Amino acid sequence: MIAVEVENRSGARVDEDAAATLARGTLAAEGIEEGDLGIAFVGADEMRALKREHLGIDEPTDVLSFPIDGREPLAEGVPRQLGDVVLCPDVVGEEWRWSLVHGLLHLLGYDHGDEMARREQELVG
Image (cartoon, rainbow, N blue to C red; front, side, top):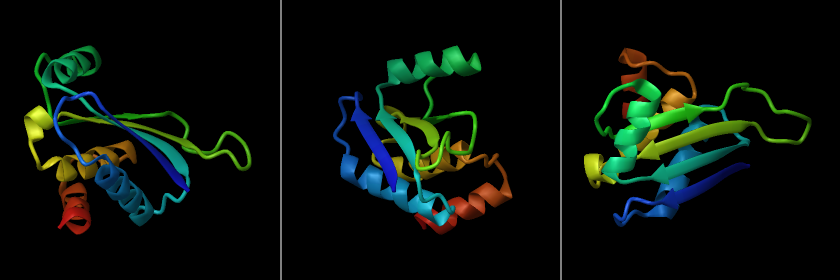
C-alpha cells in the first residue's frame, strides 16, 4: 500500500483526498505499489524560500520534489520512503493536478523532456 500524507499550509482550498488519490494512481501506474509519500500545499512565500534554499533561485514555483535517497526498502516488510512533493496553489491555481503528477515523476527520476511530457499526458490527460 502507498501511504500518502497530505498537508495544506497554503490557505487555499484544496481537495486533499483527490490529491492523495491522484498520487496513488500515478505511482501505481509507474509500478510503485508500496511506499510513503508526503504532499504539502504551501503559500508563495514558503515556496520561494524552499526554491531559494534548495535551488538558489529566489522566486516561487509551482512544484518542487524532494526524493529520499535509496530506492529499496530498509528491511523486509518496511515500505520505502519515496519523498515529498510540495505544490504552491498561488502559482498553479486550480490546475495543481498536472503539477502534482509532474512532481511525482521527478520524484521517480524523470527529467524534463519528451518522455516526461508523454507520461504526464498519459496520466493527466
